[in-house]
Image 1 (cartoon, rainbow, N blue to C red):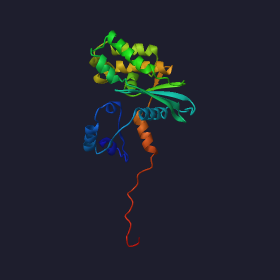
Image 2 (spheres, rainbow, N blue to C red):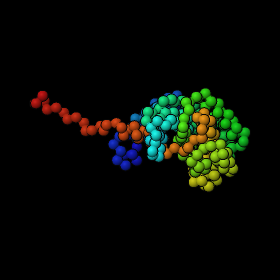
Image 3 (cartoon, rainbow, N blue to C red):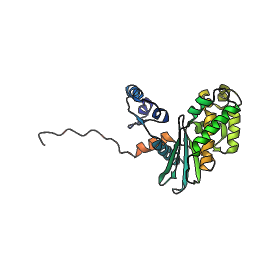
Image 4 (tube, helix red, strand yellow):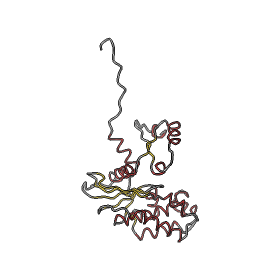
Length: 245
């Protein structure tokens, strides 16, 4: 919030996603954010998260973007995975959510550094089972957004197909996280999450029915774009002069 205000932002929106949605009582966190940042924390639901990620990803497509082209946007977060399908011109037509994220699967199943084949297979089974129930309509383009997708671009390149997934998993699991992080200019904590994130993205690509390309925008860009559409608040109304009322 301080950085946004320092940059001249006149409108703010502070959003929380799956981790806070799953919390038993978000009240103390809301109060802490209000006290420290002077802003209200908005917990958005899975459909809103998918819609905003879709907006941010599709508005960053390189022109010319066909407004009728059907696009799938996969947003892998720490606590859940959102999938939205729609067109640039019409917005989201279909959305689904799965309760698997890179943080959830890494914390529960990847306890070794680096993770071994058995642990990765357990993650793969969980991810594919969670996403198997989603049945998105056919699409012409699949985009991956979120922290895992952005970080994986440095390891697997801009396109996630079966070959890229295999290469990336080999690189991520070839050495301890600290060493892999140094090689690729990433944070060690992010590297610990990436194998799970990559497997979830592979499961999402399977659900979509085509390889995924790394998107240039996502949830945050969607929030900013939505804020930009709102009319400015303007100055407060002047008090009436009772003598002329």
